[in-house]
Amino acid sequence: MKAILVGMAVGYVLGAKAGRERYDQIVRIWHRFVESPTVRNAAHQAKDKAVGAAHLAAEKAPWRQPQESNGQPVR
Image (cartoon, rainbow, N blue to C red; front, side):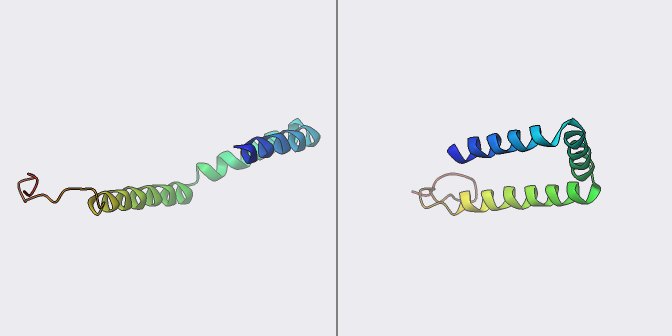
């Protein structure tokens, strides 16, 4: 948590020294980057892989009870 606050403080100080024009330039560059089809594609692929990995991990969780094909717990 401290690292985040320190990072924000450093960013604020550097931003204040750079001025409004530089801030606006950085914002424009960031928006162009985020709205890029390549970046959006990569973000969607990363999200899909993360969701798949989370489902796989949940299936292999040691506390999960084995289930039969009908979804009922094995007794």
